[in-house]
Amino acid sequence: MKKTLIILMTAILPIFYYCKTSPSSAENGGGTDQGNAMATGSVYTQDGKPAANAKIRIIRADAMPQTPEIPESTETDIDGLYGLTGLAEGTYNILIEKQGKMAYHDSVVISSTINILSPDTIKDPGSLTGVVRMVGSDNSKTVLMFVIGTDRWIVPKDSIGNFTLSYMAEGTYNVRILSTLDTYTPLDTKFRIRAGINDTLRDTIRLGYTGIPLVTGLTAAYDTAAGNIRLAWDPVDTSLIDGYILFRFTPNNLYVPEIKNEIPMKNNHAIDIIYMDQSYDSSEYTYTYKIKAQGKGTDKLSDYFSAPVTVTTIPPYVLYTNFKFYMPRYAPYGKIHVNDTMSLMGKFSNKCRTITYAGWSLDSLNNSCSNYIRRKEVSAKSGADTVKFTSAAAGYRRIFFWTKDQAGLVCFRSISIAFTKPRE
Image (tube, rainbow, N blue to C red; front, side, top):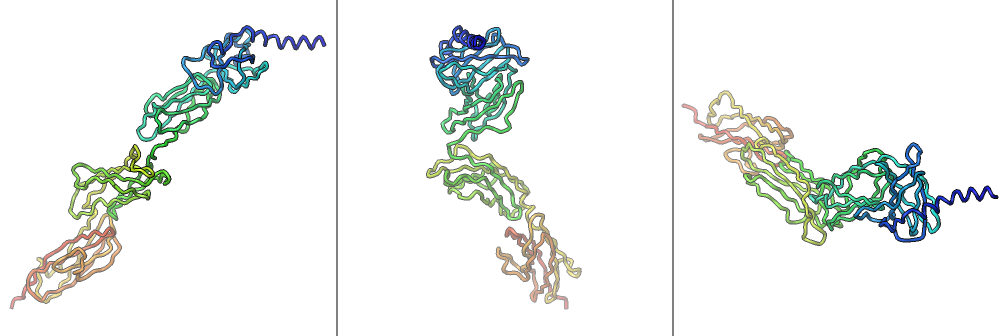
């Protein structure tokens, strides 16, 4: 019985000694409320030796960081032991540091009795690097990152959101991320720090955005066959918007005007017919498209355009059909006698589009090509056709060889034939 009492007193005496002689964290501004609870713990180096004179700081686990930094609550003695008194009941984090080595003891539950804490080992600090991104051109330097239950908070080092949380003890930390802009909601997350390692987050951090959604994923493709530009983008939740407004921007020297689709489009795709002229223009034209969403039940558009897409069209003349005529040997100069039958062959080719019709017309050519003397369906980018015709009267007759491509574009070439009376 005597032996048992000696062992018990040996275990309890250090607790009361350190609790009595150690300064209270509440008295030193350590971020705790005054109470009657006591706690004792121990700190060691990685080789198992007591860590004497290690600085001990204590703060409530749910406390937001404040400035100035939390002062030291106490220090360990020569045996690596420390004690804290005057603590209110609750959950705390303990921050330990000695000569660049650190430890983080999180979620320590302090009750109204004597609290004996598990030992801590100080190690090399680590760091964590990452990126926090905003919507559109919003500045990421408006972001504040608070490490809950510590004295640490940081802001990104640049406008695109690169940040580094450095010189941190090993452990998992609760972090609150928020922006000073009122269109973002706070984000609560966890950061894991490994001793002596500079880690990088794999994923970009994004805060919840409460403004009119930004349209993303805009793409544009030039359809040479149809002669237009096809656009598509990622759909936005229809409960948040009434539709989309599409903008087209063109070079100043281009006659095609800039456009703004005033009526919100409901679908997440559009077709822009950009060029249907028949002039043999050798220029390449560049079009830039952007898009905004229109808020639900309002005329207000999103604050930012989508990322732009740019399309450069091929020169218009490349879309046109080329022709060649082949005259009969007996009419090398485009002359033939009246009432004689003449054969005329024409060849066509198009680099981009499929030809759907080819035909011949006499004397004139209208848009519908209805006054043809021959017409046939084709489905090829190149081909040939032959026509036979005659004239009972002397004079010039104009022959048109024409094609219509899959975009509906009609191209043609003509030749004049002189019908003469034979010599008597």
